[in-house]
Amino acid sequence: MEPIISVKHLHKSFGAHKVLTDISVDIHSREVVVVIGPSGSGKSTFLRCLNLLEQPQEGDIIIEGTSLMAKSTRINDIRTEVGMVFQQFNLFPHKKVIENIMLAPMQVRKWPADKARQKALELLQKVGLSEKAEMYPASLSGGQAQRVAIARALAMEPKIMLFDEPTSALDPEMVGEVLAVMKDLASEGMTMVVVTHEMGFAREVGDRVLFMEQGIVVEQGVPEQLFGNPSHERTREFLSKVL
Amino acid sequence: MDFRFDIIVHYLPVLLKGTLFTIGVSLVSILCGSILGLVIGFGKMAPRWYFRWPFHAYINIFRGTPLYVQILIVHFGLIPLFYGKTYALMSAFVALSLNSAAYSAEIFRAGIQSIDPGQREAALSLGMTKLQAMRFIILPQAIKRMVPAFGNEFIVLVKDSSLLALIAAPEIMYWSNTMKGQYLRIWEPYLTAALIYFILTYSLSKLLNYIERKV
Image 1 (cartoon, chains in turn red, orange):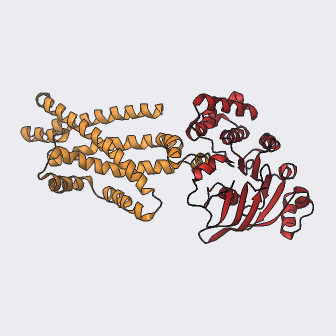
Image 2 (tube, one colour):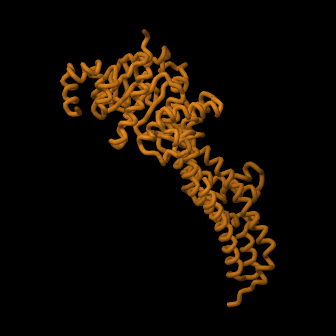
Image 3 (cartoon, chains in turn purple, brown):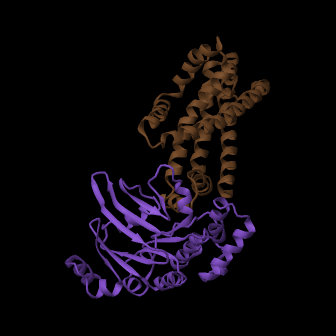
């Protein structure tokens, strides 16, 4: 089967600083790929290349057969199919929770307001925050804000969801509620790419784990193999520090 | 010291006309200056240096030279160049608008750049265009932060319009000077002018406080 995302020989630098070196990864539909690695390993940059929030210098990314690097590709069209959840939530503080979720479907997908509202209410129920619909983001806890951010991304009905360290900015007692929502999503068959430090989540939910260090994919495999019997010294070293 | 209210009363009709002129020229200059400032502010944020450069130069030139000098150049140089002769009303609002645009541009730029880049990224990641991200996400938040700075700029502009007396634009200071010339008195004309300016700027600051609470 054709992979839904195909990354080919990707290179990215910030000025003279090389961040990603020759990354090639295929991700299939309904797969949950977890990217782990030390800070500065390039894993967030890799994720941000997948919806072109970062522009790679070389290589190609093909999503559902469309090259992101081709001049004819309208990147906004790709982004409507690829949802993203950020470490800092990035909710729109001047809009109510429900408006945060309704805005993109109405402006980008041109849905009428009642359809967008209904979808938003469904999603709020799904993430367990129906009662917060009319609140502003400032009144939410970190865990609640991140669940709203997930709902906001899902409102566009994306085929792929990217998570950029979704629990790293949360107090420890709130990590569970966000991971629970992500687990639900994975079990429904959403294609997910997750950058995280939550090794428990990687082991339990991940179909495949990529270990990145210094801008390269050092090793990848199913969680049992990567966590249980890593084949590279660097992977072993990293895991011994975090597990 | 005797204070002659009768000469103030005598001059009241022209002073009121002058006040209307000051208000009119200030309003038009605030409006034109803000619109021009918006364009210049965005120009200064252009990704490439050769697009940015002219806007950058504009701001530096207009902020770096006295309004006094700018008024003279506009009045005796620029306007005659296009219009054939001097025209105080035109010079008045062209000079004030051009000057105000430089400051407004910086207020727009600073306001927009003060918004966390994550806001723009979130909007783009949802498939919004750059224009939609600006309109629905960045500008509404940035404008809130710009209001106090704009209030300050508008008040400065009203006071700076007094420099237009220089080119015989019939505003408040022009008539105060005339009054001083006719009666050879100091306190009455200048205190009256000061009081009028104060009433104008104080009302404006009250209005702006109200707007600040509203947005």
